[in-house]
Length: 276
Length: 226
Image 1 (cartoon, rainbow over the protein chains, first blue to last red):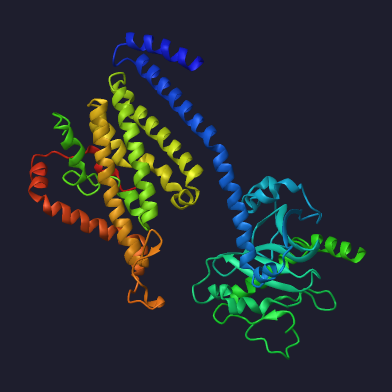
Image 2 (image 1 turned 180 degrees about the vertical axis):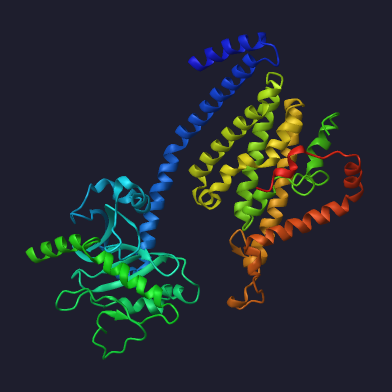
C-alpha cells in the first residue's frame, strides 16, 4: 500500500527530527491528517449504501405524510385498492414535465434560493411575496385504475409573520378544490395558526377555482361566508383576528394558480383532458 | 492533577462523582443542555461522546511523545474532529431518525470541552491504557448526568420514558399533569444547576481546598458554555 510505505518512511524521518522543530511539527501534522483522511474516507464509503437507503425511505415517508395531510385524501386512497401515487417534476414556465428521474429527490427550497434554478419575481407579479420562484416544482398525481383521481400541487407564500407551506389538492376536473393543507408556518398561535384547524381546512373541499368568466375567485373571505353570498362557491370563512393570514392564503393561491405558478401546467393538462 | 497517577481504579471511578466533568469541572454543559429533551437523544449523545472520548484519548496518548508542543492543539482537534465525523456517519447509517433529531449537535461534539479537556490534561501526559480508563470514566460521568437530566425531562415533561407512557396523563384519564416547562430549554439549566449545587455541596470541603490552593481544575473550563 502506498499509504503504508509513506508512513514507514515518515516514521524514520520523524525519529531523527528534534522534538520541538518546525520540521517535526509539519511532518507530524501531515501524518495525522493523512491517517484521519483515510479513516474518514473509509467510513464514508463503507456506510454510504446504508445512508442512501435511509434517505430513500425518508422521501417515501414524506410523500405518505403529504397524502395523509390532505383532508380526505387518505380516505380516498384507502378505499382505492389500485391507487398509485406518481411524483413528477414540472417545468413551471412551459408547463410540461421535466426529467422524471429527479422528481423524488427534488429540493424545492434549495432550488428557490439558488439563482441558477430560480427566477426573480418583479414585485408587481409577486403576489405570494416569495421574491424568487424555482423553475421547477414537484407535483403528485394520484391515479386509480390508470385514471387521474387527484392532483396535488405544492404552494407557499407569505402569511402575516411567516411563510406558509402547504399542498393544494385538485379534483381531476382541475377546477374543484379537494383540500388545502399547510404543513409548516409560524403564524400567531390561536389566530393565524387556525389555518391548521381541521374544521377550517375542510371548508376548502368542493370550492371552485374560477367563476364562469374564467377569473380566479378562490380565496378566504372577510368574515363569514353564508350560503347566499355570490362568492360562496369560491370562498371559505375568514379567520377572525387573522385577516392578513387569510389575505396571504388568497394571494398565494392566486399566484400559484396564475401564469407565474402552475397556470401553464394546468392549461396543458386541461388540453390533454379535452383531447381525450 | 496530572502529576501523579492514582490507582487505575481511581482513574476510572473518580470522574463518576468526585471529579465529574459536568458537575465539578463544568465541562460539556452546552450539549447537556441541548440534547436532553428526551431519553433517547441523551443515550445516543452519551454513547457518541464516550466513544469519541475513548478513541481520541487513546490515539492522542499513543502519539504524545512524537507531537511537538507547538502543534499539539491542532493535532488533538484533528483527531477529535475525524472521530466525530466517523460517529456522525455511523449514526446516519444506522440511527437515521435519531441522527436527524440530534442534527447539528453530533457535529458539535468536536467542541465538547470534556474531550479536549481530557486530551490536554490527561492523555497528553499519561500512557494509553490509563488514558483509556480515564476516558471511559469521564464518558460515564458525563453520560449519567445526561441520562438523569434527559430522563427527568422526558418523564416530567410528557409522562413518558423512551417513548413509553409511564405516568398516566390526565388527558388519558390518569392523574399526571405534564410540566410543559420541562420540554423547554431553561429546565435543563435548572436541573443541571440543582445537580451542580447538590454534588458540590456534598464535596464542599474538597472543592474549597482546591480553590484556595489556586488550582483551577481545567484551564479551558471558562470557555465552554457555547
